[in-house]
Image 1: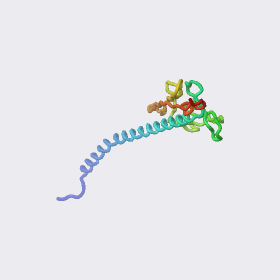
Image 2 (image 1 turned 45 degrees about the vertical axis):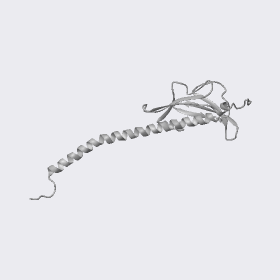
Image 3 (image 1 turned 90 degrees about the vertical axis):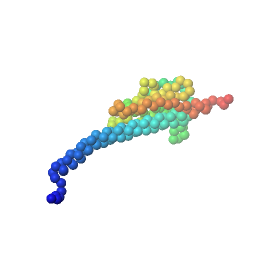
Length: 174
C-alpha cells in the first residue's frame, strides 16, 4: 500500500530538528552582531581620536609665533592669521567632556562633540599627565578619547614642533 504525504510523527521530527538548528544558530548570530557593533564603536572612537590629534597638530604646527614660555596644563594658546590676515590668538581648552577652541573674537568652537546637546557618546578627557606640556623643543600632547560606556578607550600621545620654533622665526639667520 502506497501512501501520500507525511505522517504526523515525521512532521514532528523534522520540526524538532529545525528548531534545534535554529536554537544552536541564534546565540552565534547574537554574538556575531555584538562583536560587529563593538568593532564599529571602536572604529568610530579611533577615527575621532585620530581626527582630533591631526587637527590640533596642524593648528599648532602652523602657528605664526614661537613658543613664549614652558607649557604644562589643559590649555594651550597659539597665534595664527585670521581671515583678514591679521595675527590672532587662539586657545585650545577643555570644557566638560569636550575639547574646544577659543577663537580670537571670543567665540568658542567645539573640536570634539556637538555644539549643543548632552547625548554625546565620545568623551575627550585628559590623561593623568597634562594635555599640553613643553619644556624645551617639541610640544607634547597626551589625552584620552573614550565612550561613555567606560569600556572602550583610546590613549593618544604625540609631539609637534611648531614651524615658527623649528625655523626660529624672527631671529637672525646665523
